[in-house]
Amino acid sequence: MLVLILNAGSSSVKYQVISPEERRVLAKGVVERIGMSGAILTHKKWDDKEIRLSGEILDHKMAIEYVLSILLSKNHGVIEDKSEIDAVGHRVVHGGEAFSGSVLITEEVMSEMRRCIDYAPLHNPPNLKGINAAMQLLPGIPQVGVFDTAFHQTMPKHAYLYGLPYTLYKRHGIRRYGFHGTSHRYVSERAAIFYGEPIEKLKLITCHLGNGASAAAIKHGKSIDTSMGFTPLEGLMMGTRSGDLDPAIILQIMHKEELTPNDATTLLNKHSGLVGVSGISSDMREIEEEYHESDRARLAHDIFTYRLKKYIGAYAAAMGGVDAIVFTGGIGENSSMVREHSLRDMEFLGIKLDREKNELPSKEEREITTPDSKVRVFVIPTNEELVIALDTMKIVSELKKN
Ligand code: ADP
Image (cartoon, rainbow, N blue to C red):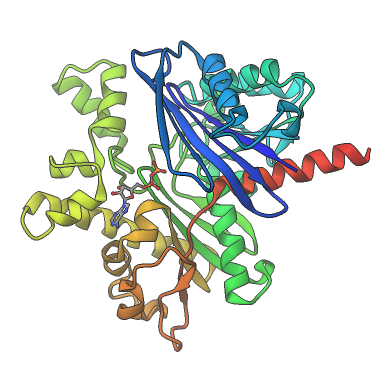
């Protein structure tokens, strides 16, 4: 089976062609600057080098058309006919309370997704554009939606409700939804295999640290709490997002700096976090390069790791213990410094980091604690596209059986 994975953002479409049975990526790429001048398609066939093409791409439909044409092309393609694509798997950011797992996209599902636009006004509309375009360009080919929020739908009410008037939850759906669910699910399943115990017996803390960052408490295979909330702004400090703060600060700075709600949203989402504190960069590599040179880079790094440590402690408490901690995402997978600093002085919890193992650069799944560490720590590269491909295959195979 061949699955086309689509991740449609506001001005980009990322794609992969995956054979889920073989767990193999045949081609992948991204179309960027959709609707702007100088759109670029970057494409890589598995056994070829990366190519870059530019053109005028006005909307998501044109972008996906362009992707299909390169997938069909003689030199860089991987299929001879569109019908070789058996299904399309879409990444959808927000599934609200309606979706606790991946689903076949029907008219009903689409209208439920449209209802979730309120919760993710920046993300769900482009996701829907991608779905509409794929349906038009690949008619009759089943389309599956995989939601970032779905895995966290198992959270109990006391974890997902805020200390706000209950009517706001009822009226406007104000609650914690959580994000990065596909990644937390994938790395927790891989961690259980690495640990050698069924996931139903384990208490895991997964830390997805990329440009966006979140932690999750996964008890017996179910997400019972996660750091991102109603939107992906809450929780850990991130590249450009503030993470947790006193909500009164927002009102205060809006007043003092004469900011509109839009200005405040931009400040919290784009100019805060690592870049806001350091004044240098939102990129962890650059922060680490400046760690010993710049006080503010050090401060940004220290806030990042201190807050992560607090979440690890909180989730160990929430689950009544922890068997393993998982690091993933660009920072989690690559920054030995972030892992070391956030796990520093955690021997009381049973964490004994093996500093040498932590330093070894590797793209493989690995353990970075000593053999006598009560809590094991793993570094597990995430693979959200593979999860989308596997979910899509499962749903489509069942469809064919019926
Ligand atoms: P996204 O959330 O956009 O998918 P990624 O998961 O790719 O992002 O993570 C990007 C982050 O990973 C950036 O802050 C980048 O600096 C960081 N990163 C990548 N490699 C390293 C490294 N070797 N050391 C430290 N940070 C790294």
